[in-house]
Length: 407
Image (tube, rainbow, N blue to C red):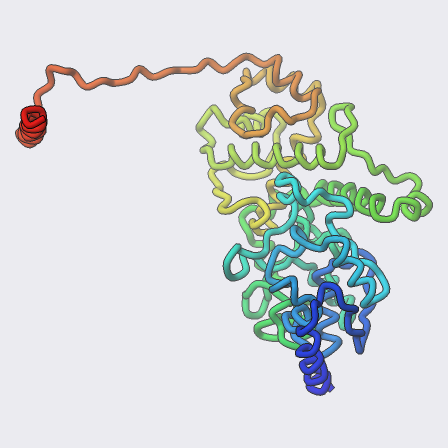
């Protein structure tokens, strides 16, 4: 059956590619997979290809030849535009949910929260994250929700376990678009089920320091905003008590400003993570002592940008950022006064001027860091020169004299 469909679509592809694909009506699907609620576009494309007996790259090249290598680029950051969404609507009868519906993907601070799965030129940087228990429950109807592709979501909201991004059997990254005619719930390399839980995650040295309940609260807050942005009326009727606003120190923030604040705290915690505990200029180490935080030991080095880190590392940095978010204005004033924290501690991370006004006022009242300028060391003129330096300088003078003599 799969081979017959493959041959049928192969001949159709030859005819289809001879026409301007962006303007011609799309070929109907033999099998139209259902678009599940909150399913990502990436997930639907893979399932549609598998149901119709085609590898995912062949399927996307068949329908979107003008978008070359559709599954091998940062799909959520670059696509889809409105035309692409309308084409999916034409194929399955429903428009997909995309990040552009609730997130400005043109802003670098916002793409910070979209997982970066691919390098610019080749290979996968990290696999797509997933919950093995969700895959096990869905079985043949498995799909990937859109929130699994957000760097801020590291814990499954249903099963309260950390996400995985690699196969438990072979250890290779989970890249379902590379699987040839295999369902989305199987590894693209060994065919093993992705429903197996990787027990090595719990042995990670940073695992015990993650604040999973606080991360679940953060994720639920973001999910509520996503739901209200996509289906505002449905969300208001079904969950009238859910709050979709973000507040910090008594000030209401837009979603983009809240993410920018979260990014700043992540960078602040990460900047001081590599500073040893004996260094007194680590703001996070001082906050650990004052607030009795036990998030992570200083000295751990995070390699790579935030959206390419493992789920354990991202969960830890998000836990640290939530520690800063949960501080009240009185806590900020008390701790900064007791520890004699100065404005320079916050200047180590860029984008300080974009912080909310209440926090900027607190930072502005802190003592200014005294700049210590080092005196420039000049070489004494009377210092002796080596024989090689003298000969080089003498030859330069001779050449200069020759040039002036013959002018």
